Amino acid sequence: MKEFFKINPDVAVQKNIEFLSGLRNLIVHSYLPELDASIFGECQSSVLNLNSYLDKYFGEKHRIDTFLSFSIQIFQSPKNFIEASKKELKKKNAIEIVEFIKAFRSTLSTEIWESGQFSFKAILIQVVNHESRDTLPIKFINERDLTEEQRQILKDVGIVFTKYKNVDAVPENFTLDYKVLCNKLKEDIPNFKMNQQFHKFRKDIINGNPKLKHTRRLDPKNIKSPKKDFYDYKIIDEFKKKYKDIT
Image (cartoon, rainbow, N blue to C red):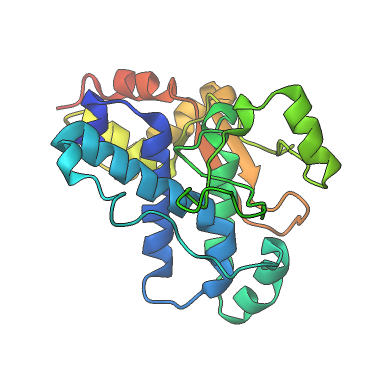
């Protein structure tokens, strides 16, 4: 993935893969159906992205939408994600997974969060049968393509469009968490090693310029919640200065 997106940058698709692969590594063999409703959007986007990439990079004959047209849902009233995380997920010791989902989403820019390539969200409204019997039963409409009049009609039937804002979100320039920072340093610095010297350099750099690090509490409302550090991309250049004379 890293090699591919260096040549073919597509941030929303890359973030979708990073989210699902990270989630998969945490879940492993656990059975957690309580999460299904919360991550449906990211899973749906992953399938759509795959189909698009198969067409773009391997040819139209490899598309899979002719075999997987529409899914049939019987999910009518999903449990609130926070409610599920406090009850069923807590019993299964899955709080780490819940925190991962919250923390990952909080690092996304508004542009990525609203992109259909990261998470596909849709409203399904039952309508009367069309007079043409062979018409497709589902029509996809992008909310951004609606006129103000059409938006108002949807609001009148009880549908409200919302934009989520995380008050404690990570600033957009802090794109590196600890793991990503280390991986990036391994790529950019030939003599880089994760040893005591690395930790000393990191401490010296942050002490010299505290603005290069942003610390976020995973649950802002809980003072006992664990914290996570994020780093400004400029910190890479500071590490390069430290390592330039080391052989």
